[in-house]
Length: 126
Image (cartoon, rainbow, N blue to C red; front, side, top):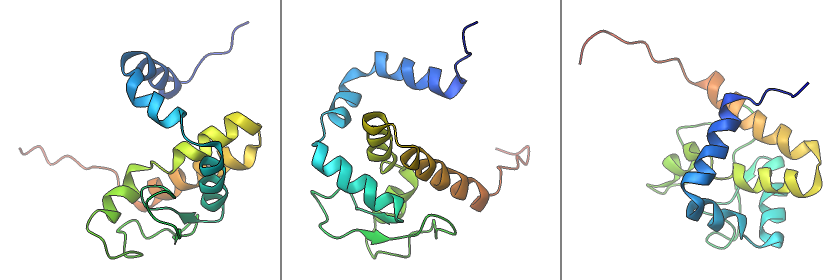
């Protein structure tokens, strides 16, 4: 019996086929940078636009994260923090090593974000 693939995974697989150039950039990252960024993310430390842009990570934690982005005074930081691009190194490191700690860290960030944001309540008005 074949295991059913989660709809989110199906969408990611579809996106990789439709927009391969977007994925090639991320998948061609240096192994050293990916490992460094993933290990930092496990400890609740994120590099703003990657280690190649910012040499020292920003400490945000892995739970109770301030998603408004008050950790760093830069106009782009709050948006970067909520784009989750730091999940790519975690995913790549998990794929490369099979170590669950990388997947668990990614999950912790997502769960913290979800628990920190109220669901959209439609008002019926445009």
